[in-house]
Length: 602
Image (cartoon, rainbow, N blue to C red; front, side, top):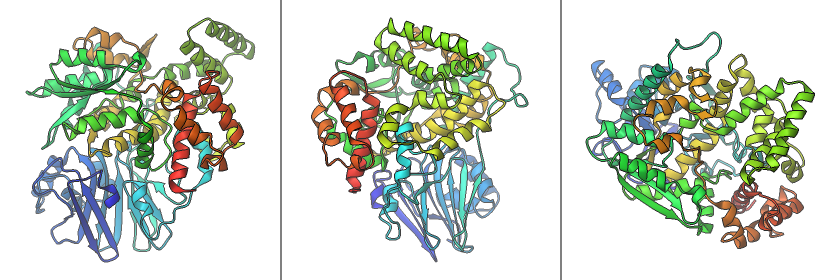
């Protein structure tokens, strides 16, 4: 529990009865006076621990009081113990609206129940050898348990090079797994494990379509769902604010917060000197001025060598998404002013805000073309790419490389952190289990519209294992709670049934959300092109981080060379630093892997 203090620096408590013990480090947000752990039921036979927030706890609390339960606190954790007296594991989880990971220990039956929220906003890991069962919010806490061995699983490295993460439920540690999202896990007195799914995203299919809505009706519904989702997430006994990038998603959140609050909203953004393609401060200021927020900015500089080590420590595993850097720094700044922040994560996932979705649609169409026609189209694309700017050349070049692959393999390679040619040279082979799992998700949505299937695939892979862990680890590193209204499950269930035209219309992405906010946001925010939340790593590697990069990856004693081909690593470093090629994503992926391996001395 000491290793989880950053997640909950305000209080610590342990409930221990018979064969089981559960503990919680608390970040005090709701019920500051009586909500500290441990929490239990009336006769102290059931204990519970909670990470996250249950947004409908007040209604559940009233129901419990009405049915004769006696509650000692005014918060959300205690209700779990009382619900466990009446409901099955899956029924209990279904009642909860929020982002959560929880543990319930019932001494009478010797049953432990773990539960994770529907989309996986909060992490939950476990390990067992058949005689001991251990669980924690972060892997580092499991590794200090005396029964848990620390063994690397090298079979996951090829998957990491592809995705920038290890797909759920596996991890870099042999035997340590993640509880899947939307699932409960029960452990009985014989330490037999049962995992039950209580929720899964349902995409639009021919036999499951929404009622017909006009464009204006869809916009109205989206606006209403967003407002309700935001208002649920404003419940707090401590100050809260919002991340503001100046994109449509975060700007929409700030607009909804302003409508719901009589006080100015606190907003926070970061930018980069001498890197205009990564600096969104100008757009964030437009929104801050429109809604008269109390706005705070941070300028980021490339003195991030020490930061890389800290990021890997908080993730517990290598992490290929370099946007963890600005997320960490933004969270650090925000925590100096508030304890809770709302964020726009999930908007791109619900409303198709990434250009890769449009690319996936084109790939799917090209898959149906006759071979000769497809080859002619690709050749025209390659010629056109050579005449355009470097960013366009890179995108079209990558697209044409993958356009010969069938779905979803072509799409997977389009989003890979390390290109397939480099991966095969680095590891010699690919990993079938990750590819099979990816294809299985795609097959499960067969019969649906291609865009709906891509959104489903993205939600169950990238959102789950990249975006959500990044936000959770980087914010909780500073004891900051981040709430994401777009991930409200009622909102998700509505949005997933919208027709394609509500998401992508011609060259317009996220049309329904932009329609919903068109009258309220500054015009520049609605019409500006999509800009990712990144850092100027390309330049940093060639300048400030050059010595660090050479020392870590270029050393003949680098830990990474025990698992990957050293000559290819040297070539990648040389080509990038000499401007012969752009390997920025590959280098970050390899660098965080090296830091991880060195940290554990493997």
